Length: 281
Image (cartoon, rainbow, N blue to C red; front, side, top):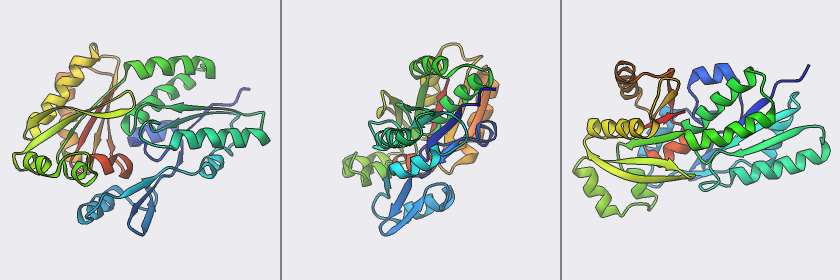
């Protein structure tokens, strides 16, 4: 009997608990550092502690790509076929380290097949892609069939978000400090889109409720028919806000399933606390 394909990803992927239960993916940890203090995100530091420390810390925490050795450890599993998803290569060296680990591992284990996928996304976008690929595995699809479908997933998936504050964008030098502080003072929220592997600011709205409404409008305008789609709502330590959005979607948008995921330290370093992400596939 052909062994089931094993799915592996890195610590930048933000999973709803339902996806973890269904897929049981291997996760290669990513380190996040506050000065000399270093933690494996999601393992040695939880979301609440991370956001609390980040608020107190004057600079942005630093994240570092997992070493090839960490990936090699994850490749040591009983499955002969491995499907490895990484954070977009345009934001991190994680993809190249996963590929290097694959080359090193296959020299000694040529019987295995390892396919490393640059997700061209991150956070809940990767989780959603993994969920859909797991459904294909359960249907008995071959690795080649799944790889073809992943190309379509990348084209079809949308990922929008609303940032509650520009605090981290200011700390990271992405936004002029004076302009950023003025926008925060005027209660302007930035709408972002993850597209072609990059995080792009695309709009702004005044007030939290208006920004969430606008992000939802972007989702609806870019998805079309949603009845067979799954929606994941990512929240940066603001579960109550995510729950309200889920309730709104349930009432107003027909879809297959709505899941909620915490945004962990890797994407949270960019978004800051209070952000909401919406991904549909």
